[in-house]
Image 1: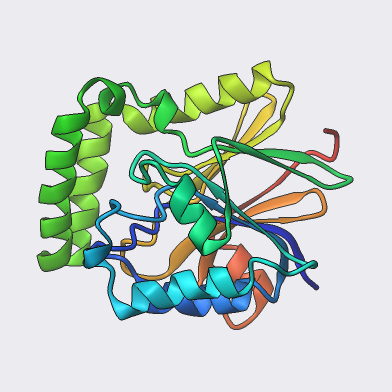
Image 2: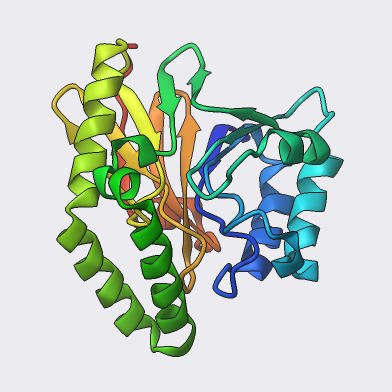
Length: 246
């Protein structure tokens, strides 16, 4: 059975740590298994296209090839690494938005990247770029566990993950939404915060499995690619049942 919506984020095409092989496989699968595919920010690491590899271009070609289908909607929510993405979005054939609301007959899910709630990035953008560069270097050459540990420590130091979650939840509640999904933090997770279900779709720059948010009916889950052999086992990695009321 097809998904109603799939959400991924923080692909960082152009970076050496992008899991492009897995991403290409996922996109080929996703376009045949969902009605809506949302890329929730930071498709690119930056707009220096000379950094894109053949695998990175292959991922973009999948989006372009499927952009005109009647049975599939592709949405790109702008992230802080995407810059003036409208022109690129036109070339790829994907609509670029600041935020997006997915609707079915059971729920409304607000999707936004989350950087607007990150005070550190907004106040010290130049320092963030330096920190990202250093971290990507560590992530490329250090063992995976070391890179993950450093990321979690740095995010806690910036206190960004919690502030982004709380900002997104407050913003969603103020707009009357009870479901919201972000990226940006690179920390996948899903939790109920008051009356709002918050899901973060993580990143595709770490070792697999790679996270994505899925919607079927009233159910919102955090799942991982590659999928487990049987779907229930895959979903048990992390999931939460969304409320059926809008």
